[in-house]
Length: 66
Image (cartoon, rainbow, N blue to C red; front, side):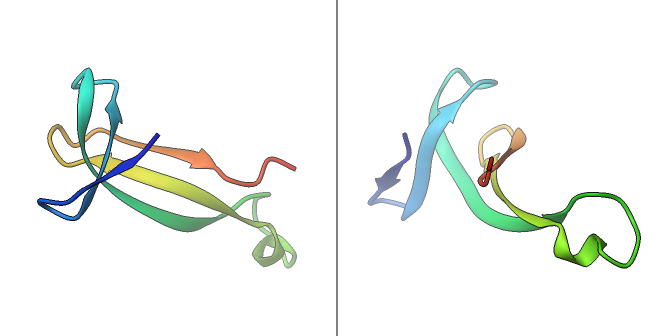
């Protein structure tokens, strides 16, 4: 679970590479799924993207798994 860090006002989360809680840059991005075509623009899904500010490891997780 993410926690806030009062010193840097960032997000502290566990990093699998660093093997400890580190500051992360966290954002939400819309990713187009379903390939190309005229309906592709309607297939956007939100992803939670986080990047470790210590080692640079980046991962994403789909937020809507309906």
